[in-house]
Length: 323
Image (cartoon, rainbow, N blue to C red; front, top):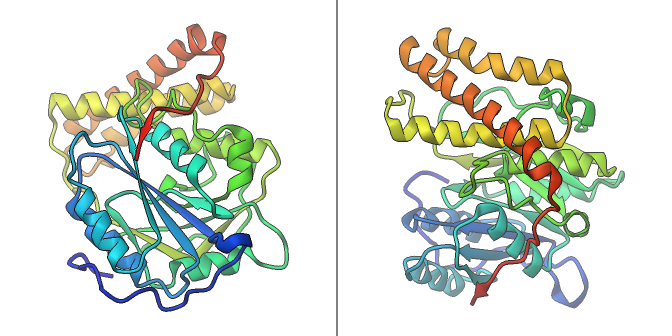
């Protein structure tokens, strides 16, 4: 797929079905807010899949009808698609709503601005139905830039993840067994985009899955594409605040999962060091400002979680929905 893909009119080419009552193998929960045009590219990539036992659950958090025409065209092109609505934007809550409605054996969480290669779902199906049972797979996330070396096809380690040494596992690359997600209550709705703890929901979920005994493996042959980030990030108050909010989610994970003092200490220092070394893709002054915002956010998230969230039960995850 390329960046200018448009929605095809032919149905998927391989209508295989795995599961009782015509249930799909995959449920793709696509939460969307504020975007619409990017959906065209994602839906085009799904129409082009060579493995077609999947459904799409679009969880629309917009207050208007911007998404509706795209969903209608996707359905006309042959996708098995359901349009759900969430009244209050909350990425974790939207994904939980999709989990509740999902019928597939495995659930994935594509963003509205990502897309799949034609064989992505085929490669994941091969990994997830291998002779040795697994409870989930992590695909390869590739920005629209020259590809980095793919990660090895290895089993994911809880010890590595608790040390923040487990490698990349963005939510858009996760393909997880539905019943295990349901058993754990899905994503923690206190964490993620739209919340005070503004990121880290997928890391929290993976830590809980691994701690519960789920077996997860990497599937580097399966590629999920995503638009490349800007190489130079402008220093503005809004961007600083966004960085700080995202870092609060990392701090929440420190406290919620009782990570080691070494891991936390390293995590508080690393953003500042990386900024000073110019690893932000900007000048060192800008990098330092973003590093300080990240470290401050992590401290805020850790302290607030210990003071408030650790004493409260996790909120009920179901939210009001309109179809």
